[in-house]
Length: 267
Image 1 (tube, rainbow, N blue to C red):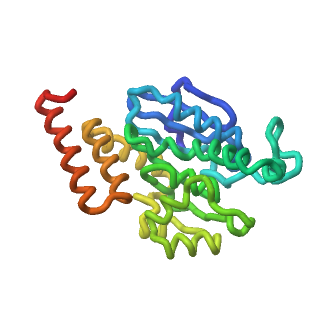
Image 2: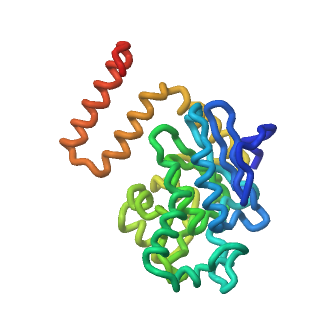
């Protein structure tokens, strides 16, 4: 996959994550193709730092990965007694106090949470395998463009675990409870065709067209006025939790703000 961040000085480049910014578009790249971009606590902290490092000019964030696979999921070294250098192993974490374990998982989840911010639109460009934590990272984004060789799978259940990196909510929202349960319970692969058909992917394209398709989508998003898009994203996200009447109220309030702003009467 040709790079979306060629010739740009990185704002951040550490622990398998690189952040570059080109005016209104930021690109977050997973940079450990030798390990199929397997994930670790250090990578999750770097992703969280990338989110905190975005300049205010950024409107679109593209998430992509080097190599043939988007992400093979959690690096299994986390389950060994020695874990990662400088990190407690997951086995050691399990032996700790409940509050400590809860706080640690919450910290990991931050890497998957900021992509839903109302002031940016996040687009995942996904090729090859997106397994477990890799699947959940793609689900963390607002939109997904996938290569025709993509293979999604949620393998946590087969390991005796659950998907805990914020992926269950968007998965159910996108494909419904029954299909989400079947995907998680069986751990089977979801192809590009199925992903596009069921709403997991907004668009499926040949692998050599992935970069171009993402650029086109980012450009289309940028064509909309920023404040109108922020209000629209907030409305759509909140619609899942609001009643019909509550959504009507929210729409009126948002439109009033937009009309006042367009009339030069905004705060």
